[in-house]
Every structure is written in C-alpha cells, then in structure tokens.
Image (cartoon, rainbow over the protein chains, first blue to last red):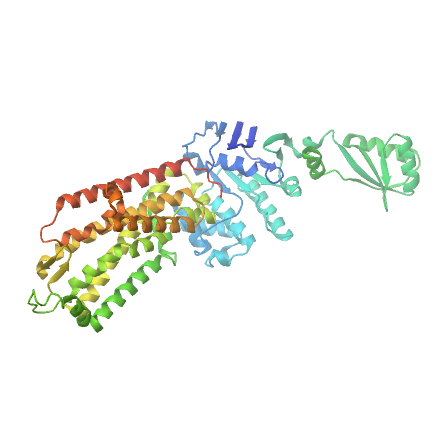
Length: 297
Length: 278
C-alpha cells in the first residue's frame, strides 16, 4: 500500500528552482532513503510534505488523500525531525516532550513520555535542561518527539548530522528498531551514503532538485560497472592474463583491481581458476557511494 | 486553541526575559516613590512656588493618587519597550532557534498558532500594565496614604480622593489598549523575520519615531497626527480632566482598535503564507 505519493512536485524561490518535477512514492513499511548532495532539494521536499513550505506546483498524497495547502489533520499521523533538533533549551527534555504531547492530545501522556524516553535511552537525563544535552542526546530527543504520537510515518532529515561514529551506529540501530519493532514507515534523508545503504530498502537519488534514480539499493546498482579486487598467488601474471582477456585493470599492493559488472564476477573468477591461478580473495568495491558519485558527477 | 494558548503562556512563563519587564517596572516604581518619599515636599514646593499667590494650599499634595498618576506616564515609552522584549520575538525567536518548525509540524492551522501567540502576548501585556497599577498603588498607599489628586494639564484640576478610582480604572484600561497596539505591532513584525532582535529593535524604533512626530506636532504633520497610534498613547490623561471629553476618548479607542486589527491581520496573512525555512 502506498503511504505517500509525490507527483510532479516543484518549488521555486524567486529565480531558484529548488525542486523540479519530482515524483516518488513510499510504500507502507519502507525505510525509504532520500539521497542527494547538500543543496539537492531533500530538505525542501520534506518540508513540503510537512506543510512547512508551500509547493509551487505538484501533488502530495498521504494515505491516498491529497494534501492541500491548508491541510493539517494528516500531520497527526506523521512524526518528523527536520535538520537540527531545535527545542526549548531552557526547558528539560521531559518538559519539551510534555509540550508536544499536549499539542498531540496524547492520552496517558505521562506513560507515553516515559515510554519514548526509554525507547531513545534518555530516561535518566529527562529532567536536565536541553541546553545541557549533547548533540546525540538532542537527536534522540528529536526522535522521541517524532515518535510520541505513534505516527504511521516518520520523516528524518539528516538524523546523523553532527554525531560521532558510535552515535551514528546507535542512530541506525534506533531507526531499524522503529521500522521493524514499531512497524513505522521511515523516510530518511542523508548525504551519508553508507547510512542509507545500510538501513534503507528503497532509495531515491536526487540532485539539483531532480530525480535521478528510484528503487531498491541492489536494483539501483544492477548493470553498473564496478571495481573488483582479486588477490591471487601471482597478481602481476593475473593482471597480464586479464588484460589479454580484455579486462581493464591495475596492479595494487596486494591485489589486482579490475573493472567489470556484478554479473560478470563469476565468469572473471572462473577464467582465472581455469588459467591455474589460486584465488584467495574477491572483493566488490562498488558501493552506493561509487554509484552516487558516478550519477551526480 | 486553548491547548496552544496554554503552551504559549507556559513558554512565556519559563523564559527569564519575561521577568525583566516586571523587574524593570518594580525598579521604576520603587525609584520614583522613594524619591518622592525622601524629597517629595521639596520637589513639589518647586512646582507650587509660582502658584502660591493664586492658590491657598491645605493638606498634602503627594498621595497614592498623585504617584499613580505620575507613574502612568511610563506607558508612553518605557512599558512599550518592555512589552517588545517578549512579544517582539514571540514568532521570530522561535523561528530563529528552530522550535517553530517543531511546533508547526503538529496538526494545528497556522491561524490558530498565530492567534495563540497573539493572545499570549496580549495576556502578558495586560499583566504588565496591571502589575504597574498594582505596585504603584500598593507602594504609594503604604508610603503616602490616600489623598486628593491635583493634576496639571491644560490648567489645574483637583479631584477628591473618592472621585479618582474610576478615572484610574478607565486610564489603565486605555493604557492596556495602547499597549495592545504595541504588542500587535511587534508580533506582526516578528512574523516577517527570522531573527530574534530585529522585531524588538524595529518596534522600538517605530515607537520612538512616531512618538517624536506626535510630540513635536509640527503644523505640516497636523493632518496625520490623529491617525498615528502614538498620538493616542496619552489619551488616558483625558480621564483626569474636570470635564471628560468622551468623544476624543472614543476616537482614540477606535483608532487604536483599528491598528490592532490591522497589525494582526497583516501578521496573520504573512504567517499563513510564509515558508518556514529555518
């Protein structure tokens, strides 16, 4: 079931066309990666979905219903953390959540606040003022406020911004829990490709406000050339052999690096084995990052 | 709407800036009343020395009513500045720190959000003016006690002590209306910007310029003066004329109410159309 559909969305700021004819859809249960370099139009698109920015043209549907400029009720089913988690810094984390819980008219407010605080592991610091929180704690509080009203969809815009590697890993784990254990559909935008690659099942790549590709991460990279690193018993001879077989490649310190499609990897290794080489390691180097760089170059 | 209003009031109560206004008013009242307590007779003597040949003065001139009347003058420039400190960044402050984004992701119309902020700002404004009245009156009563009121305005008016209460109630009411114009103006400016200081400075600048124009009252500006809201900031004084000019007071009320509606409508339209980019 399609939870969110975006059709021919456009947004212009005076002469600057920030989003151009963007169309995509998010299925219920997706962890939908929204990928693009800084300034690609990711935040603008997400803000349009949330009614923070008015589209110049185009249609957004949530659960099949068209979102009009003055529609607000659909927001009761969406939680969001857009860019920085900006709270009332003179209030505690608990008091901030209490404000958003009141706004969302949540029944059993106290229980729900404690539940989400435990979920994001902030229960022990709930009474500290937000200005004393680290960036990671603010991000987790941001997710807590997005979860508070048990939404069907959570939109997270660059949730790992400013986090250290451990914080990023914790954030990924939290997002996967939100998706799998709470059955909440997630849209996550990022310019950190490894983050999207690790957690999303479907991805949209945009650049300069335009859609470049949409699909599953594997599906996106199918048919694309990639680097393959092979470690053999004689790398120099292996490279000569492969070059005679019309592969292009180069010799690295401990391996040979050749370019081929994913589907061609079994044939490549079979040829080396038939030629009598011993193969110790075959490693695909192509990642979403290579693909992204190739697309947006 | 009530939930939004409650939350806006809660946010105002939790901001240290909110108490600057109350603290400043307390200091102004304390300074003036203690100055009169210490040297009041000397100060008043200077004023009355030229009238000694005309009037025969009996009893005391400095009373709670005299001090409260004097302190009402802070409604012209001091209290408006204190109001702006809170109402001027009620939208732009949240816009600047990003919390407006979180607020607007909830299922409330922009009209409701703006109006909740407006009502909260107005409640703060009313509280500040009432606080001025309460502190002036309480401290004045404790230091000077009750007494007749002598007012120097377009002549000398003397009011008996039991004839001034209703005048003060109306004067503070008119003062509240004037301060509501200030609050509405600053909230409107606040809806146009994304920085905290701009609307506060902007509103104060407008008030100072218009106050100067209203005070100088040059001939060339006479036709526009009745339409400037600052011209009516002193209309509370009309309640302390022997014969109250209700027509002028009604006009002042209508002009100021019109400005409140105008500023609120402009702010509302802008806020409704605005893209939240911060």
